[in-house]
Amino acid sequence: MSSPSNLTTVNLGNNSNTSAQQFFNNYFNGTLSITSNQNDAVIAYFQSITKNPQSAQILASTVIYTAISQNINPMTIVQQFQAVAPGQLTLYLAMFLNLNRVGTSLVGINNQPITNKYITRAILA
Image (cartoon, rainbow, N blue to C red):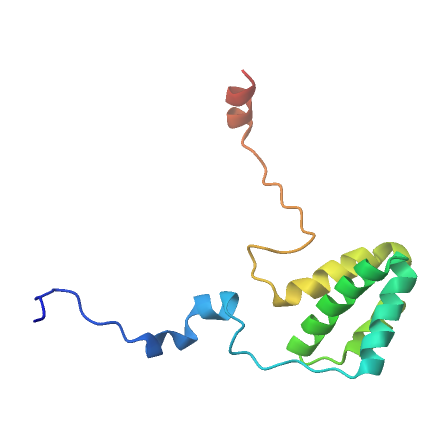
């Protein structure tokens, strides 16, 4: 015996294209593939910079994932990184990794809003 309710049923099939699924659920995304030579080359590049195999592996995997997600050849990205001055590589890498991130969670961006002088005075007083 069913009990009467003013709530309607929820069709879960309609939720497949919501923004939440785009940002939090990668289950339905296809697998990304790269050749072992390309993978080794990207890892070797970052290992020559960081001198640490673990950090090189992490950087390489994030760059490869971002490049393939943007339909860019990872080797093209490595060639562009090689042309950048060593002191500027961190900035370029942060901006490249931000291509796949939501605007509220950008990597390497320091946003310090200007505080009103009256608020600052009230806090310091």
